[in-house]
Length: 98
Image 1 (tube, rainbow, N blue to C red):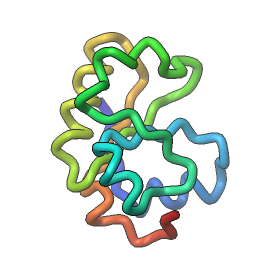
Image 2: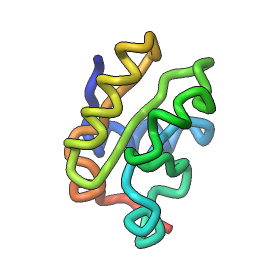
Image 3: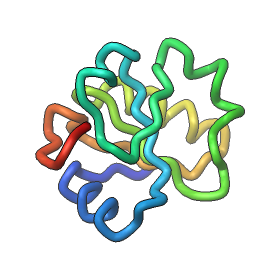
């Protein structure tokens, strides 16, 4: 499984508006501020929603600090997804949030 920093993610987002970014924080955390391009799939609902994820391009996974996204990324990796964990999560994110 690949891992990138939040700085690398920000660079990717600046060049690719259609990046497949999944935020696995819970709904209330996501509502408190998230990256504009992120889709919220809370880790507590992740197993039930994994079939809804787009397999056509790499999935970048982020959470608050990196632990939940690592778990979700490992799970997706075991299912054969092309997955990238965002190390440091939203606590390391310095870009714009909505």
